[in-house]
Amino acid sequence: GEALKWRVEHLDSPSFLFALFKGQLAPTVSKVFHKKLVPRLGTFLGEWTDDMVKEAMVQTMDDIEALCPPASQSMSFVAALGMGERVIVCGCGDAHASLARLGSSSSDDDVPIACLSGTRDGRQGLLPSRFTSTGSVEVGQGHEALVLHCGEEVDLQVLQLALDTFSGRPRAAGGAILQHLRGPAAVCVAFFDMPVEVGLTEPASVRCKHIVLKFVTDKIKKPTDHTRKVVTRNQESAEQALRGLLTKLKADSSTFSQLARSHSECPSALKGGDQSGDVGWIRRGRRPRHFEEAVFSLKVGDLSDVVVVDNSAHIILRVA
Image (cartoon, rainbow, N blue to C red; front, side, top):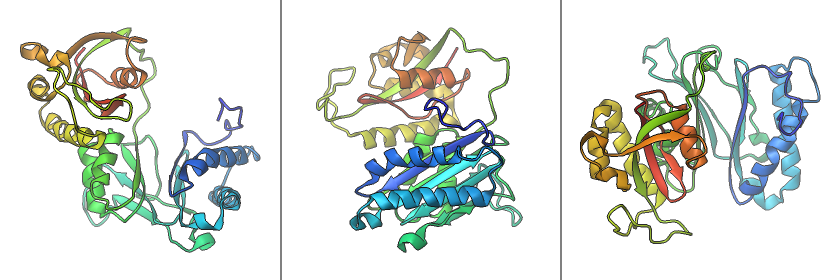
């Protein structure tokens, strides 16, 4: 918002906006939604109540519906707006939003996931609502996850298992959830963690190992692995295989070099012993942006999410 010179400094902090769209006009609507909602939130510089935020979201949806022909009314949509300790959602169609406390107990006093589901009743299907986990959403306190998805409803136990298994790794968690959805579907996962400690500075360079699986793309139809063998898998298969390896590594990260040697398709997999998969020291500006962002966000000993760069998917372990 600040980059686009929109007034957002008065909103409770931290603030975030996630939105997910499914349907023929989804690409168009996704480019318009934030441009209508965020400036609307800048028209009043005082405190925004829940009802005021809900009304702003509904008005934004009204604006978007006015742009869409009647044939597009089957489009599904869900958005989550976080302001301080509040998360407010709005949805229509086969849209769902879930908020989870990771690793929460299954006692009767605890509700680990609270949900909002949309309907298919056109204007009546816009269901702005505040949803909470245990009274209020304390973003940044503990570790929580927000899941938005369009498509058939997912069993809450499936959601909880995916989030707990891939805690802090939204791409892997989203992929695990998608495996349980039949037909057209879309998933967005976000994890909330404690803010970075004040005073910590980014190192000039970090050292890491990685496991790489390549896949076919429209531009690269015959990729080859480190032995010059042609790879035929698609991106979905590559990410699914890495999620399986990530589960094993979370249980015992000391097997990283062994798994890199047997699975990775990078020349670094051919290094001997514990050096298998080692890509050495990395400085900013030397690697693709997504890879660098993942590497420099890790602490020593941490495993990354599934990271996709061009026609390859990676799991990264920071070692120094």
